[in-house]
Image 1: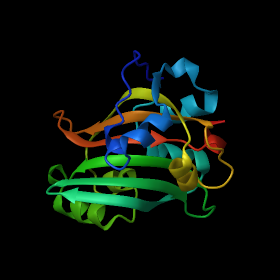
Image 2 (image 1 turned 135 degrees about the vertical axis):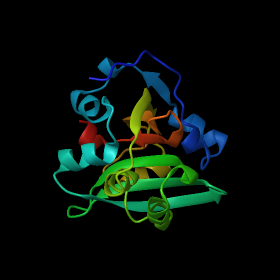
Image 3 (image 1 turned 45 degrees about the vertical axis):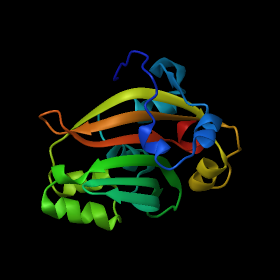
Length: 187
């Protein structure tokens, strides 16, 4: 397992879409991996991309649903949900800042199109990267997160996630992401 010292909860990608009051309602806090339920820890406590981890757990490929996006030069910021292709179940709610200039041209085009999760595109385009989890997170579902993750989520329900950085082998950021699991997976 990937062991992290308790660090501050870097949720920068989420703050690109949420006003300060909404961020406060999430009540995000950094937690130790041992505080998470076993399923949440199995899905979050590793140094791989979340797409391949969730696809293996759900036993199906994932597709991307983009909820919001902003582009400023070579920086693409998205709020997304990863969804099982066959089941239609939400696998993850996330927000990601992607540094497009650090990807090969073909990968950059596919990222901009926004139909496949970044983890799938990293594999498809053979992009070398390191996954560097920065903090594990506990947060309360608000209306927007609950709506994104689908039915069965109660406002105020505790959710689990992580703050992660995907880096080039040279240590340059490819992407910064906040990844939040639905309760059905985190169990």
